[in-house]
Image (tube, rainbow, N blue to C red):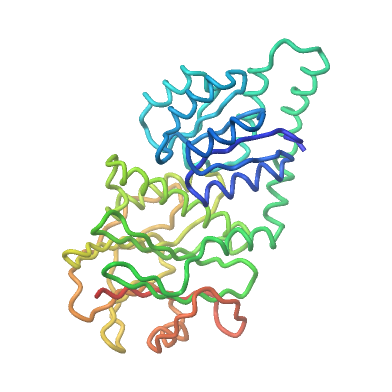
Length: 373
């Protein structure tokens, strides 16, 4: 393994990104110690000797920069890599000034980039060493490149790993928000679901929800889920810091997601319907990419399809900006996203919300429903 027995302190507040990166680095042989904020990072750094620190600059409480300054005072010999989720280059420049070896921008589409940054940082930070030590580090660098293709194939072939990663991303079947409720059912016929749903509050007055379908429908769909959620989490962090409103603008959000999916190099095409709800005005904005999903307005036991502009799926280099449908939800009107199968529509009308289930006697896919109150 390229990182065998390398002691890494990883300080990251995003639990999904923290888990995915830690699992990857441990798979490469590293020993990874985790902290969720700057205070916890300092405590671990003070008690343990690390080979390298990886830190998000946008940490809650004690931020990434103050934490790195304290670490420099404790042990300036330990190299660090910073991860920035925004375009504030002043923070990145300051991190490099106080001793960081490298910086990465989130979301990190290819985890092997992190491995390469670690190896390069260790090469750069190494004090004059004997020839055998230098040779060992250069061998690690070359080995990581040789392992790249094999490891990617292993991730794609390991259904259990893909299943485990994906299951952690799905929410409960019933999600209660301050002024809304989300219910859903998704059916999978294999270990990994090619369909994904999620929702989140954005500030006090907006709710975003989306349903996605990934092609190809294999283990790579699990990593598509990770990427999609990571991209959205980064825009959520920017919104909370007052730096971006893209998350509540569906057309701009799909443009951003397409750019990131194309740059990921994973060759995953994604059908998605993305909705933003203003919970004060009860207005909804809906955008679509691809044609594999349908958005409905529900009145009791009737589903009325929303007419949305046709668009290519995300990840297609020829994708163009999506149009948006805007409307006000009427009293007792519900918004639904789902697949076309009649059996899914019937289960929706029967209010059968089960979350994610493995079921071979029903087509893969499903539906989600927003109810305001």
